[in-house]
Amino acid sequence: MWLGGSGLASADSLVINFEPPAYAPGSIDNQNGWHGGENGTHPMQTYGPINTAIDQSIVPNPGYEDFGQQSWRISNAFTDTAFGDWPFSPSLQNEAGETMAWNHDQTGLLVYSGGTRQNHFEVQWDFASTVPNEEQAGLQISMSPDRGDGARMSYIRLEDHTNGISVFFDDYHDNYPYGSASNPAAGCGVEDAFVETAVATGLDRSEPHTVKLVMDFVDGPRNDVVKVYVDGALRHTGTSWEDYFRWCEATLQSRTVDSMLFQARSGRGTAPATFGHGFLIDNLSYSSFSANQCDEHSSDGDGAVQSSEGKHGQTKFHKQGCGHQDTDSVQHSDGDSGHNFQSTSVDAAQFTTAAGGRTVVITGMGTDNGLPVAFTLTAVDYDGLLPPAYTLVLSDGYTFAGTMVSGGLSVL
Image (cartoon, rainbow, N blue to C red):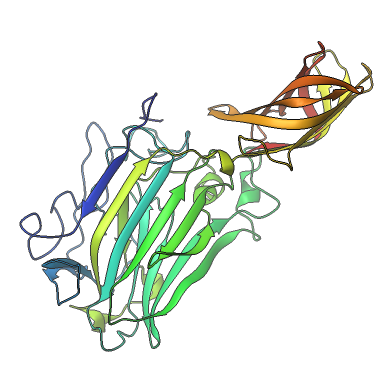
């Protein structure tokens, strides 16, 4: 289910600085849209409460510049393994995610996000230690773009160490052999895993710092792009958790995001001594909008093809992005019909996604048996549900339309 619209997508954003009178001292629960986990629309959206055992509250700013009068404080004096009892920020009106990403549960009845589907999400926040002059041993808090129910699509964790504050980023890697619709388990095997990267270490705990996540949701598996910035500098480029949901939960689709989840997971450790302290969070802002993602798309094919008339051929092609790239090429040979095509210029491509598969249409110039022609190549990747479709049309009247019968074809 996609509760999105069509046509021009509009940008959507929220800026939260926790200042009075919008925010009052005490728990953030029920303040300006902050809540526990969402229960989904059935028939209308409801929310659970934030667990009162969680050590979090709106507090006066102890003196950090640009934090205003108040900040939000949270520690890991209490932890658990749940999702629904932790603080979720207010939802954007317009969700972000891949075209076919799930904004609902597996029944399709409980919907967590909506509005106009966007392909880009950005979030930024400032943080600082409440104890700037010494280590808070064991302090850790995580932050994740989410849709309101714990379906995290990315992950940042802050920790306090002897040498200062560290920032960790986790993403999910589907390594070869890759998952597919016909074999989801291949994307959740022993070779696949969440990978943690220390994107910053030894940050001065006596001053505030900034984390920013920039997420591009690109249709298809293994191709979302997530950039992590710390204090304005790009520290790491990775991917999202799309393939965890696609293959490990065997749903074949990733998830949407429209808000932020703040947690202290028990698996990372509980630190009772941080009660009343922890990290301050301030200047939280996030937005969804649609961005040009042509550079993130690619298509490759290499193998035997068979036409609907039973003719056989060989193809090999590569296209990166929508514009001209020197590394792009298309080759096609058809001994049954006596045609041998080689591209001389691959000029453009269009990538589209539908429920049934992902399509690329590639255009350019080349030679067929040595004579100049224009070409249009169309390929459809059904993610293993059906054989990939393949069509090549040349301006000299030659057409080959059929499927790839061996080798590989992908549209990402």
